[in-house]
Image 1 (cartoon, rainbow, N blue to C red):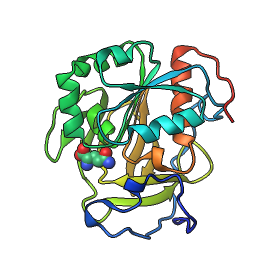
Image 2 (tube, helix red, strand yellow):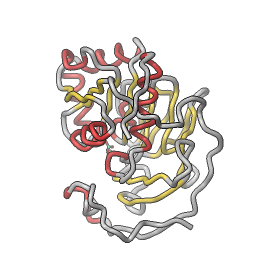
Image 3 (cartoon, protein in one colour):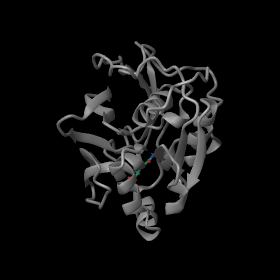
Image 4 (cartoon, rainbow, N blue to C red):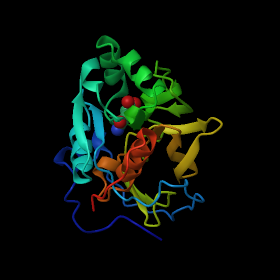
Length: 248
Ligand code: GLN
């Protein structure tokens, strides 16, 4: 059985070192669950240079995403206006508070611009609050969303028990256990046809993809490995027809 490592978590930003909202940091560990075979062509993690990734930078975890992508050799840009999306090959919608982010998207004209970006083939990865924004249906409570990825999400779905915790589980991305940092995470209750489940936890999808869209309910930017960001960069490169070059 795999469990939380006991060594230091030196990549973790200070604001995430303690659990949110007073939950005791758990030490529970779970046996990983295999989720099956890998998506063809996107699993070797050659590394990608030459792609530009926008990161919605309203509030939440955008700086940590930028740091992880920079480690992998990708150019990043903070997105706060429609113009910031220009020239981006991919876009990350980070964790944070989906209600706040939604309001910002609507006020700045980014709500429609992000939908257009996706419709034109731009790759989007939504993590936690970002996954909520991507979903076609949001519950607990119901909330407007971009409605780009066919899934139903339940906000704060794990309640206090699993509100903020770290687990390791299997995924289709890599043979190594994937570190999953959950912070008041939504539950993906349902995925529509053609949505591939890349990782599950507790019998629920926690990382999914359909075409150019990816969503995760955990925070890969706080993990110690870059497997999820590598996967996203591979996806971006594949969509853009870019050749991958190595960022070890
Ligand atoms: N609970 C938040 C929401 O509903 C998401 C939390 C997160 O992104 N870590 O928006």
